[in-house]
Length: 149
Image 1 (cartoon, rainbow, N blue to C red):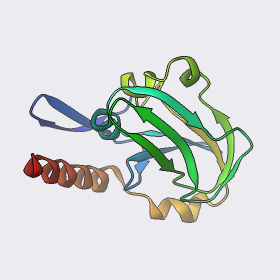
Image 2 (image 1 turned 45 degrees about the horizontal axis):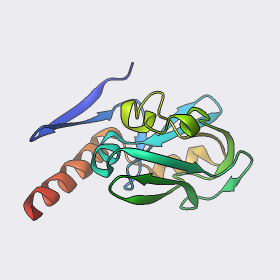
Image 3 (image 1 turned 90 degrees about the vertical axis):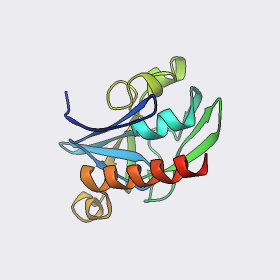
Image 4 (image 1 turned 90 degrees about the horizontal axis):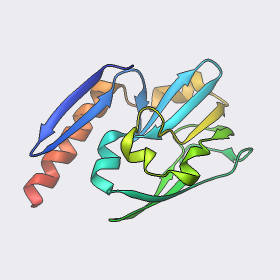
């Protein structure tokens, strides 16, 4: 079980798992041996609403950083999220087909999106945010949103 950085705003508590890296698009990457597990941050899933549908690119798809990885439909928005790294989709989370709500219920666990065979992990990881940097980015977005309300 990972440790978390947390912040609470109104009735919402946003958590950032400290055992992975992040993108500015609120996607996380966790290196697991030869594969990178990818998922949505807790912040993104909470601010986007209940997930109704997640359409992932199929296994075997070659991706470059920024290529579309997943389209997500929620009660509030439709999102297309980019791949944080280059590689080949090794496995998609088949459980999301019947239970897309896992993205909301367990974004750092059972709600992962895909496993990628990464082409250039050593160099591409330098383009990702460490947990503290991502936490600061998330807090800045929360502050900006709260001022607009």
